[in-house]
Structures are given as C-alpha cells and as structure tokens.
Image (tube, rainbow, N blue to C red; front, side, top):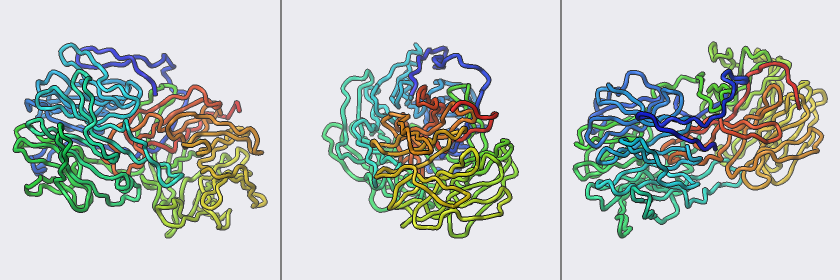
Length: 597
C-alpha cells in the first residue's frame, strides 16, 4: 500500500504524494465489487420508524453519527470519488468535507467536547485510527500498527478511545485452500494521546464496535466465534449467530445481554442507560435491551442522538445489476470501471459478457451486453448448473466457460466441465467429460487452445487442444491452482497458487518451463489479467488487510481485496483502489494490438 504525505487546508485533509503521471488514462480496467451499488443515510425516530433520507443525493453514503451537541451529522461518502468524511446539519444544509484524501477515510467519531475527530484511515498503509484537531487542523496517527484498527469510540470524559483491532489475530483460513480469511478482532482501549494501550477482551474470537456506558465504566460490543464469522460472511448467505455483551473496563468481567439465534450488531449505549442494537436477516431490525422491538428492515451502522430521540443508519438504495460505474483510480494512467462478475470483452471492445449475480457462486447465467452495460440479455443459462467465468476468444467468435458446481464445502461434492458457445448463445459443446472440477478457462491468442484449472482430487493447470479435444497437464501438485490467463503474445501464462503458503501470482510458459513467482506479499494475490499490450498484469490483492470489521459486511467474504497492477515481471506493483469491500476479477478493455511479451 502507498503511504501518503498529507497536508491540511481549511477543514480538509488533502494528500498530494501521487506521482505526476499522465492525466489521460492509457488503459481501462474493469472489475467486480461486492460494494453496494449505492447506499443512503436515513434519519429516523429512535426506534427506526419514520425514516427519511438525510440528503437528497446519495453517493455511497454510510457510517453516519451525531455530533455530541446534536447539531451535526458526520458521515462517509464517495461523492468526490473516494471514501471521505463529511458533515452537515440535521436538515442537510451546510454540507462540507472534514477529511478528504486519495486514501480510505471512514468511521468518524467526534470527541465529547467537539474538538477532535477520530477516524479510520489507510493513509499510513493499513487501517489505523487517526485524530484530527479541528482547530489547528493537525492530524496524527493514534494507533500506528501494521494490522487493522476499527470503529473508534470516545469515552464520556474524552480521555480514552475504545476500538476493535485484528493486531493479534492469526487470521485463520479454513479449510485449506479456501481464499477467505476468518477475521478475528479484540477490543482495546487507548488514551487520546496514544499512551496506555490495553487489550480488554482476551478470547481470540471476534469482538467489535465498542460503545461506552454513560459512566465510562463498561463497554458494550458484539461478539461471536470464528466459525460464525465464516457463516455470516459466506456468499452462501448463511444465517449466523452473534451476541451483544458488556465488559467491565477495569476488571474484564463480561456479561451477555442477548442469547439465541441470529446476528446482532452495532450496540450503542443510550442516554437511558439501555443498549440499542440491530439484528440481521429477513426479520431483522432495531432492538433495545429490555425494551420493545423497533422498526423492521435493513439498518446498517446505527447511531443514536445524545437525547435519545433520533437514530441514523444507512442501507443500500440501488440494486440494479449489472452495475456500470466509473471508479476513481489512484493511478490516472489506469481508468477504472465497476462492472459485473468475471467480465470479458469482445476483441473489438464493443460488447462484454459477465456473470449475472454479485456473489458469482451459486447459480449463475451468462449475460451479454454492450460495453457500456446497456442492452443486457441472457446469453446462456442452465437450469441445474452454474455457468461461471466466461472468456471471449480473441478471434471474437466463441465464448468458453465452466459449467457445473464449483465450490467444494459450500455446494457439497463439486464437479464442473469446460464448455463453449458461439456469441449468439448457440453451438453449445462440452469440451471436457466429467471426472473433475474444471473451470476458469482462458484462450490462447491463436484460439487453438484453452488453459483451465483442475480442482478436487487432482489439482492442476491443464491445456486443451481444441482440434483434437485432448488435454495435457501444464502444472500439478499438492497446491491449489486457479485463474490462469494467457498473455497476448502467447508466450506466458499467469496464474494463482498457494505453492509457498498464501496465494500468490506466478507465471509459466505453455511448455511447462520457466516457472516464476511474481508477487511476494503477506496477503492473497489472485485474479491476474494481462493488459492488451502485454506490459501489465491487473490483479486483486489482500495485502492491505481489513479496513473494517468483517461482520458489518455480510456475504462479503474478502472485504480486504483491492485492485492492483504490476509489470509483467512482477515489478512496480501498486494499488488502484482503496476501499473496504471485496473487489476482484479484473479485466482490460482492448486498446490496440498486443506487443511485448
């Protein structure tokens, strides 16, 4: 991750450490994201009723909170292109930025005296808690740790901050080969000057979103187990269990305030001394410990006013699929566009195909549309099997894809084959004949071969000769191999594997020689895609770590993935995005004939 040198002007934190690259983008990278299409902040009565939009123009607005004096609402928005922190009066007037930078800035909390703003930012490389002095405009890194720190909460006297952190997490991955990381966080407190850091919970599981009691003696938080983290963040949208607990800050004594099934999140100590929180699932809504249930529906990141009369929350307000939205890039040489899952462009660049669902995991069809996302229609669908990861041939006449069930452990025994159709959806032909889990095909530049992955009992990369129908093993072993992509000139195949531990990107020649490791980061690197000129590889990386508590983003199994690019030899790797949601399956819009490798 890039470390930004920041200057503060007026109420805005501005960053200017990006290199002076060309203003006009030379490339365009399209990618998929689990982020909401759009989200809006709502102001409601304390029980969630009578909710109305806080602002008239939602731009991925989220994570709102009241100022202690009740005059302002602080919130995060992408209205300027990146995650920045704003404030506005309760009636929506006086909108102004407080923190703005190319980095991720979010989860703002104003001190009780209104003089200091705590927030989470990735400008130091990872998600740390920073403090902005609103009078002097000085900003400082409070936690400065290579792990992630989240959801700061001020003590009533303004002397302490509580927060959650994964700094002592082993980030367990199970079962072996699973891309997803089980987020584990504990609750910490630290003085506002950065001293006296102390871990409050000690169970090695998950605790999040601490909230101070009015007397400053206790913290309310939500808690669950590592296995429940897996359930709640699974693309299968499994129902999980979490509970609301309180802990004595001095003694560490804990008490569960809730029990039973269901997800319970985001506790907030109310002025009455009771604890408000929200529940997930179809029947979820606003709840109060020892109080009546409130409104039903989606209530994300709730915050209650100091007088207990109102609450803020955000929810998704646009679910149009597939999305087609420009995204701000950290490197202006590379334009970004958010599109559907596993996109692939026609050689002329006027059309693209992709999968039809955000999760890209259960039952998928293949959509075809214009390059701008318009005129989308179903190109191929099977009533029982999922058609995953379409790949458009470079001759423009065929589309290859995997067909079957792909995800062991999520869909039971998984079997899939490689299939091909023409660009009208006809000419269906199965290219493999069972006996494995085959998927993620990619075409050779001459259209005569397909490289694909084999999973299950045999793990390998295979190359299929379309004339003879025969496949040969390119690379096999105990590792998990995935996402092979052929370079534009045909001389190299890039792929993802966990040969050396976590998932990294490698390259190999089609004859099996010259195996090279291209990435060397502590996080997962995957989904490699060659630029049309063969000079760059786009990929998704988890090296930046988590930027928020995983459970606050259900059905979002890797909320740490960013889009990166690197040179074909693995050099000059750098991020193009910086957000809390999982992003992946990048591809390139054609910009001319291939050159280079």
